[in-house]
Amino acid sequence: MSHEQQTRIQAHIQAHRLVPGGLMPLLHAIQDDIGYVPEAIYPDISHALALSVAEVHGVVSFYHHFRTHPIGKHVLQICRAESCQAMGSEKLEAELKSRLGVDYHQTTQDGQVTLLPVYCLGNCGCSPAVMLDDEVHGRMNTEKVAELIAEVCHG
Image (tube, rainbow, N blue to C red; front, side):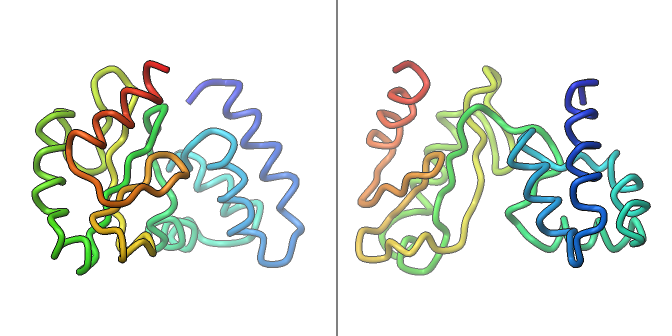
């Protein structure tokens, strides 16, 4: 974590320290700003919000949205719900892991793509579905996903 990131995190902590129920908005603010919630700042958060470090950790680890490590420039999520599985998402998942050279919660060597599982993107009628950054795509196969990735990574 850089000095600049630490400074920005401290500013978020100060902005939320007196907000009733401010932990969730604080965690969102930090992740929106730097891309993740570093475990090293849990003590600062707990002190400012009068919580235990275990409470902060419990909230971060409970919600799958929060990340504790830096991620790639782009996030690819593969739906793992029943409809997508019935339409081939397990094969898509295996092929993409192989092609990208990563497993879930890992980032490609070039730092471009982080692969994450997700349970239901609400696009069941167009299974299998993926979400690249904030855009949901349906009826996907490995080649279509590779084209999407190439488009965002290489313009």
